[in-house]
Structures are given as structure tokens and as C-alpha cells.
Length: 341
Image 1: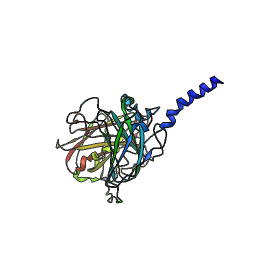
Image 2: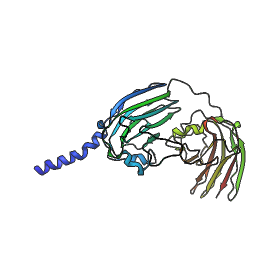
Image 3: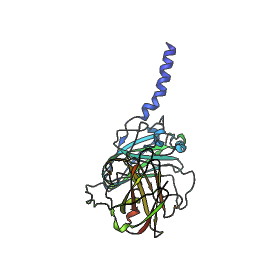
Image 4: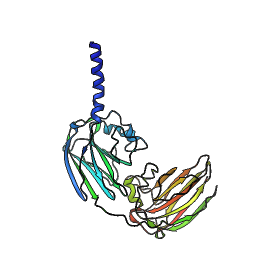
């Protein structure tokens, strides 16, 4: 009997942190064009038994090599991100020397870490291992999420790094937008047919001035497309033009975009589909693969040229290439090249 009691105690002890980690997040109402502040303490949370959800390709919140930044207690919250709004979430530890981390992901709100098979988008912030040129970091952590055509529930995790299990903090949730608004009518995005020939590099000139903006970019971070994440949508808010071509079986297509004005900030994306009816953004429920290239916000300047590549297996594919202006850019000449191997 004593052995049975001991076994039951050990099982309970092992299950206890898991049960604590799965308690319901605290709900925080968001205020359109406003800011909400609440106080909290890591002591009210618990460590998560599994962090592999974070580096799953369906979530891509933070990489496995950074997991020690999330080994302390997690305190979870949820709030509402309305359509056509941007949310900035910031945690400020009371102790400037305390090492905190922060993450937030958008979705239906039904899946709570560590049981998170997928989400719409996820962002994390933690203490940098290295300094970035032109960037500074204090003890606060901040992430941003955006919604265009659809509202989302946002789940927020305030975390202690390196096993930190206690520490008071202030959590700020700032919402830009969020009021009932309707999107402008979507104009048809210009489409052009181009060739692709194996062993050749074909060049095409264009100008963003011939394109139109895409009002709803949520197709890009849909898990069925995964072209770019929602917090990078500012890289695609200018005019768009679309090009269609074919990718033969067992081939690789390399696509590059170079603005004729080297200072112009342009972005590039391309997606592949099968032999059915070709679907064009923003009406893109799914695709086989999608790749995007744009100027990163942090790190080394990649220059004006953008490059993406797509591959095919034993079936030929249809390809749609998108040229877009970053940060509202709506004019500028460019050279688009397509090579097929």
C-alpha cells in the first residue's frame, strides 16, 4: 500500500505542472485606438512541459536554439484583435535586471500552448545574444500583430528566461484601428503572361505605376499559403502586378527582381498551383508552395535585389509571380528575370 501511495504521489507531482500550464488564459478587453495596462507576476504562471510547438513550421514563433529564453514560468492572456487593426504588446518588468521574454500568436483562440498545432502568425521577443547595428534593447519586450480582413483572438505569453519563476511586471496592449470600417473596393490586379524556357534567362521590364494595391493581404499568412507573416505586410502595401508562367516537371525556377532605382524598396513573391483553374491573390485559398523576398527590418541590408525560387516534382505546375511596392510604394521601374533549370 505504501508503494502504491508513493507511486500515486510521483504521478501527481509529474502531472501537476502540466495541468497548471494548461489553465485558461486571463481575458483582457482590447480598446480600439487605445491602450490597456495590467499588472502581473510570473509567480502566477507555470513552466511549460514542452516548447517544441514554438519552432514547428506551422507556428515559427522562435527557434529551438533560443528555448532557454522561455524555460521559466509562462503567464497567459488573451485579447481580441479586430480586422484592419494592428496590436502592439509590451511587457515591462518592475526589476530592470530581470530577464523576461514575450510571445503572442493569433488564431481562433481555442488552441493554447503547449497544444498549438498551428496558428495564423506568431512573434516573440527576448534578450538578444548579440547587438544589432543601429538597434538598442532595454529590459522591456515588445511584439506586434496585424489583422486585415479577419479578426483574431490573440494569445499572449509573458515568460521568464533561464528558468525565472517570479517577478512583477506591467503588460501594455496598444491597438491601432479596431473600429468598424469597410475595406475600399478591390480593383483588379493587372496580370501579364510571360514565358519561361529551360536553360535561358528571360527578362521583363515593368513599372509599379501600372499596378494597384491589394487591400486584403491575409491570404499571405493563411496556413494554407504561408507566404509571409502578418507583421511583414508593410513590405507589400504598395502597388502589385502579377505574372503567370509554367514550371515543367522536375525543374527549378529562379526569379529575381531588381528596381532600376536602387533606392526603391520593392518586394517579390511567387506561388505555384496544380493543373486546375488558376487562382489569383487576394482570392487564394491555398497553393502548393509560396516564397517571398523583401528587405528585412533587422540585420544586414540585402540591397535592392529580391530573389525567390520554386521547384516541381513529377508534375508540371502553374506559377504566379507578384511584384509589390513596400511601405506604400506605387511607382518605379524594375527588371524581372526568370530562369529555368
